Length: 164
Image (cartoon, rainbow, N blue to C red; front, side, top):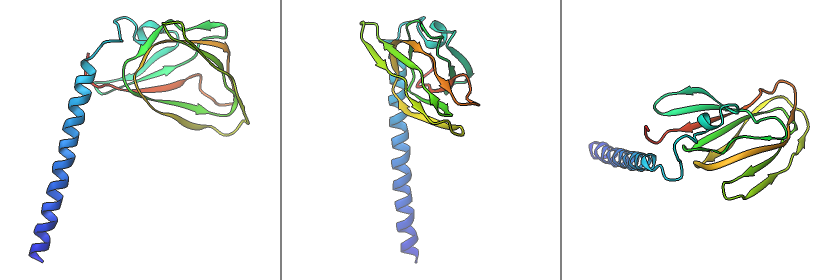
């Protein structure tokens, strides 16, 4: 019984060492990543450069929550970026989604056509884990017509890698 306890303690110790080592390596990676500002010039952060469509909801040393509301049909957001990795959350009630065009600084345009879904009770959806998003602009060709009860925008939860 005593040797079994020693073996169990040794395994737990090795697992603890592996977990702590992994956390330290990840912390180092995110810290060094956060120091690299190439591709993210000053003054083009989404909240600064596109304040009509990006409102700060919450911020601390670790995360930032931004409410994202697309502009009116026929208009575009100013060029901006999202420097931190994030999760994009939207409240889905069905209905017709917006027809968008995604513009990059080099002139590339990606058309994102509208689609219609049956109206249903609201459900939060995550767009999954998103890498930092370099300079871009969103043009709204046609606004969404969501089902009843949908909030005016979505939430982008950004995970800060290091303080600026």
